[in-house]
Length: 356
Length: 263
Image (tube, rainbow over all chains, first blue to last red; front, side):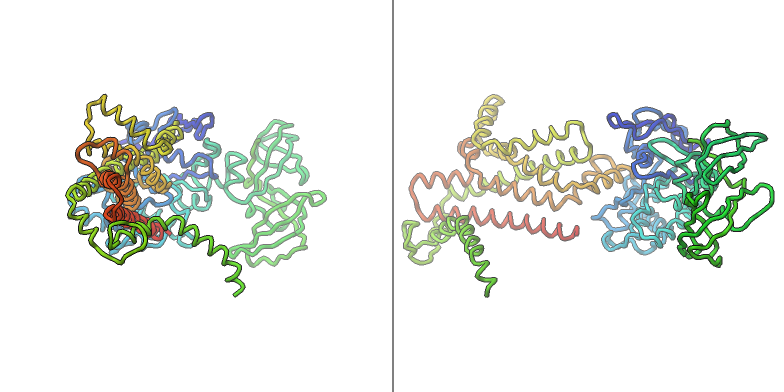
């Protein structure tokens, strides 16, 4: 029993001359909750479909549980997929849906009944067995789809944007339940979504997919706080990105000429190279600070304040001639209104140095 | 009142169009109840004598049973073949999907006479005698494109994932077809069965050219017509028409109910 449960080695899928998935190398450990995150059309669902066996890669190998399953049909893989549209069997009752996989495995009717009921209980639908699929709400259908998948005890559960059709409140609730479910089953989940908040609240590791490639891979806090690429920085949430030219580099510090003036950051770059500096809105603080390791961002002017419940999102202008747009996230109690001016700064360690 | 006047021409047009379509049928039906020897005006009052005569006509009753057998069995085969073809086309997206669909649908445009002649020659070579069996095969040939089209049109994208889900949960192709896809497609399978049974039921050219001793009802009606016009022919025609209408009506209702459910 290896720790590496699912391995994708150089997996590529071409449709004609279009590379939907381009040479992906990815490992999913046993018991991990991996989220494939990316914009629509990035190839994330194609990757999931190849893990599930619905699409055969043009090149590369897929290994699950030590076995090469690249061309193995879905029925013979230890994976089960939960589809975006749930793909429930509309002519069957909830119980028949959930026990379908067991029936195909020739489990006796009595055992099937018992196991289906257990699965339904796990997803919070105890006693729903006799209902028809048409009588259920979207959230309940989602749960039936989950119950149907876990009833056959797959080694890897593949989830294709399963929460996409649900409204926000049920969506958040289902996210929590998915995490609990994954922990209690001890199963391995691979989950596809385009919602970075969903990805962060679910994942042990996020694989950020863009144009068929892995743009960034790592635990949510790492991918959010220290994204590997400009695309990752932009995709993972609101961001302030300063573009500039390196003018000096010494002792692991660089000076960058930006529209905000010359700023010092931790990092290394050849003088003359173009760099981008990322600061998340919540990393920009109000006030002047003289301590070492602070980046002084100067005076800003507040343009717009949006109250968002947990915080205030402020659109401000900074830099020479107030030419730079910035986003700030201030505490609720912070009295601020459009037209205000204030000084802001950020911790040098928060800033992330990115290249083109 | 104003609206009435404005819509009057449209109303008149509708009535004229419906009259054009249904008047011959109405005349046929009315004169099947003629109390006289000729199915021509004046109408001499209702009588069931021609229906009595029709049911006493052994050759006609026998052909009626033949027609039912041919219609049901050919419709069954056609529906199964059409279903399998539609499933195969919907499930995979073969590179030549467009071409295959065209080849499957093209026979719709070929005249029955041409198909019948082709079948006649082919059956002769293969060694299939002119018979009800040959007629049934002919009806499968002419109805398959329509059945395929009806069933294929009902294969939506949602069925692809359902098909995948069934396979994913361990079902074989046959199990998926029997336990999942066919039950979901039941309404359109039924509609396709009804339509192809109806088309077979009142088809004449192929039935005439491919049969010899045992014949179907349209062929017998044709023979009766050649012997002379009697209200008995009207009665037989009325019967063919009534059974067709009932079958098509049931199919339409099943499709409508199914359509309503989906919404």
